[in-house]
Image 1 (cartoon, rainbow, N blue to C red):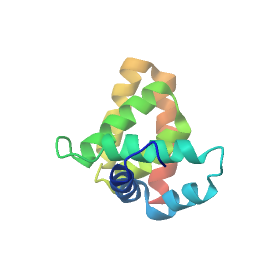
Image 2: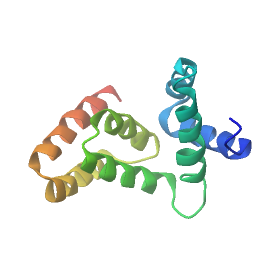
Image 3: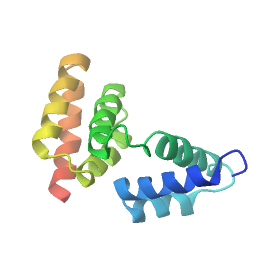
Image 4: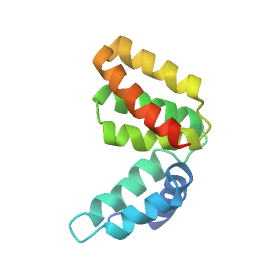
Length: 126
């Protein structure tokens, strides 16, 4: 952890748990080994600490932005994780649908259909 500010990591860890759920985050951190621990620490400090922990953009809006960007990239495992996180951050089913519509317009119908498949699965779990 010497490459990162401990305070930034701890703030990121708090936000990551608030969005994705403590159980999910603790499971990922516990599964980290010597090979994967550096990316877990860097991602927690940089993405969640630096990228999420300020007062400029609220967590709900950040979640909506993430769904759009990750959906555009077609990274569906991450999209599923962030879909759950978006719901935790107050994003409604109607808002998720609207986000997927935008993904379809700018990234193509096949990508929107994939997002709908994943979103349906996530929404059925909640």
